[in-house]
Image (cartoon, rainbow, N blue to C red):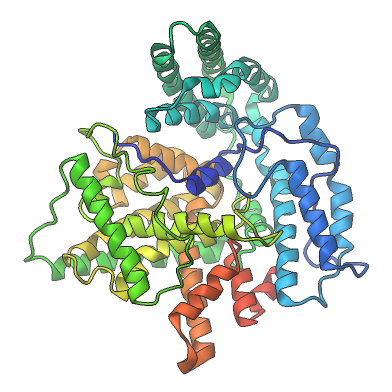
Length: 552
């Protein structure tokens, strides 16, 4: 299986999905705020006080704005301390009245509000430490991915994690003792990771230096602890029958108060279904138009793939500059990106990851998504000096912005002309990739409404995704379904975030009329930071209809 090595912003997003907060979490200050929309603030405060509150909150949760640490904190004492600390941060934020501030300052307020609500939602609803065995098996998954995607990785770099795993897995069985509250689908996903983990630990033993007894003992101990946790899961699996989805009421609360999303479950299901209809229709129309043309032949070796990706990146960079799509400050370069996840240094596999079956025919769409979307966003986040907007946001607060925009680039740059010199059949591939995103988004929506089980969603994906036979029981499909079941809304946010971006472009271009310029629009969009689309729209256009709905 040709495994993609993800860029660091994507790894951060996945770690967020699977509940891997910072190892350095502390509790000397309150950490959580329960915010109720519509509750009036009682005093005037400055924007500087908001910044101070935010920085204290980030320091205490260990979120730097860049990345997570290795192991989540699962000590019930610390978890309870977080929960008990709600009141002080709640009072501090509710005492700030942002109504007289500028729109950008009010945007900052709502970012802080969303972040506090995100952590509160974890304590109130998802409760991953006590409900999701994947909170513990995740580390096995990531250790395995690290070994597979970093051929030159020194296993001693993870020594501390390996030595901590026996106690960590022991705590798992304590925290998950209420087995009746554990969803069977989440236990199934965790068990799969642990089974795969045994093979990874065996490989780590074979790769470890024979003259390093500390490392060898750490790997053996971790492997034994992995086996014990798996045996415990299997013994108790018959009682793990709770629903995996969070339910529609909780989904709507999350949309409104954490994602700052101006739509509810009913509206989202309609938007995603209509978008699925659109991309599948366009795909079929492209196929019919191109029916007399030869199929695009995929590359047949790592070297051919490397050359095709390099050419795609050059084309994208030149296209953005030549067509004035957006400004290119000096730090926006492919340096450090090329080859970071493509697997160029690995042997050419017999079986490829699902998306490679598209990018091996035409890599421009995936490079638009990963490089122009994620890699450049990561660089913008690092170079953003705003104390509240720097870097990425936890709890999927900005997933509609980051994933939605990256996804939008695949198709929208096509309409702007970046495939004009390619085979017309490349347009089919753009819509094939888009259709798998809408299929995943539908799985997200219906699993969390508890209308579909994990197996239902996987069967739907195989039956409805283009070339779905390539997904059947594949590691890729298991990964994507785990991402959306455990990271509530992830794939829905990608699809509807694209719709939000197009709405913003429409609103701003209508507002400016003949004065609208794409480059100026895109530069303003990026200047807002990696924040929810509703806040970007408010800041760029002054339109407050979505915010008024969110605060009702």
